[in-house]
Image (cartoon, rainbow, N blue to C red; front, side):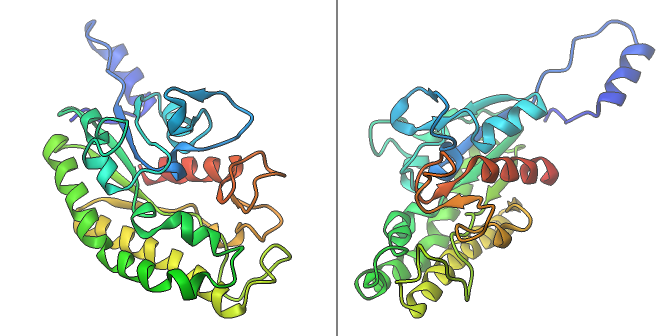
Length: 261
């Protein structure tokens, strides 16, 4: 496995040795869903546009700062099935992995737990009644699905460091604001708890498979109800996609990713 070498060490090696091959940049593969793909709505998208890969998503920002060779296959709507197989119009995301891949970031699990429907609960006061049992069942099944993803990553890129990213919370317990004040308190609590449970499943799967769980520090201080949101209900004031990370949120996740290295 190629190592991330401090710049000072590189300079010393160059000064004290005979001419040699220049160190290759680390190979970084970004797997996952819209939380790793979407960014600012004002920036051009990388093809294929159906994946809505933004230039300021956290994989793109982190790769630039690290000087890494990035293969970004994160795609909006992706579930563990899309990571592992060609379930739709795109190839299996794991096909981007190589034996010499150094770093993998993984943002997946939300769509396995009906994340789109879950975020709609911020505007629907009967969401828990209608969708609660299904989402609960899907969250309980999430560990099994995540274990399959890790098994394939380790098979294809046995020496890669894997960083599993959590989902920036829309709201926290006991929180309300004008956008969600019409939602009953019990439903708000259920929404916050459900996102926590998804993150818990992602974190525990990372521990089981020797990966590192990553979530930006102070994420609970930057919910969609906060004055400086890292995720937005509508995206209108932050030029972001509804119910997804803002530019500031993607920057915070990129910084957390680098810190984890």
